[in-house]
Image (tube, rainbow, N blue to C red; front, side, top):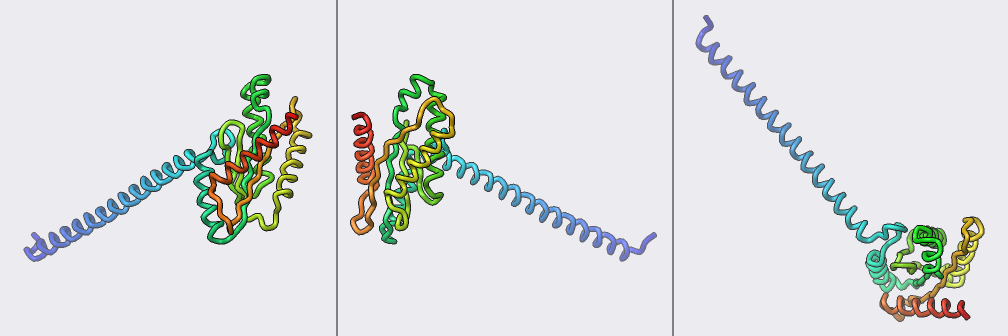
Length: 211
């Protein structure tokens, strides 16, 4: 039979081991819970970011939608006014969109819109803001155009359009009407004013094509 002091010592050791085990299990549980909460927070944040991106993106073309374009363009105009940088606002309309839809179907019309979006992505830089305003209308805010004039960009747009018409093998030719407004940081304009000016010039070009 073990002496009393030995029994007490063994009990103390067992209690110490039990407390240590409980402490270790508690730490593991806390770490697991923190990691789980962290993963859930990350997942929620990713879902929120995805929803924000979807709310600013045109589903068909993956360009910015009207809301997305205005959000980013207005932010960029504040930067341009502060840094004194010129910009160009392009308003682009796909000609005869109704004819394409009526004669070849809306699926072909969607393909034409996607082609226009690809042309715009090819012509303009990644830093420029490109959006589909709705229907057959697109807008581009070309940022920091000190080294590229309106004429250079319009010519590049027409040349790229001609290349697409030459090689895509469609039964019709894509045609674009373009209006361009200049943002002068010394005489700042609002985005709405630039849009109105570019839209007016675009419709003037469209009318001239009919005469």
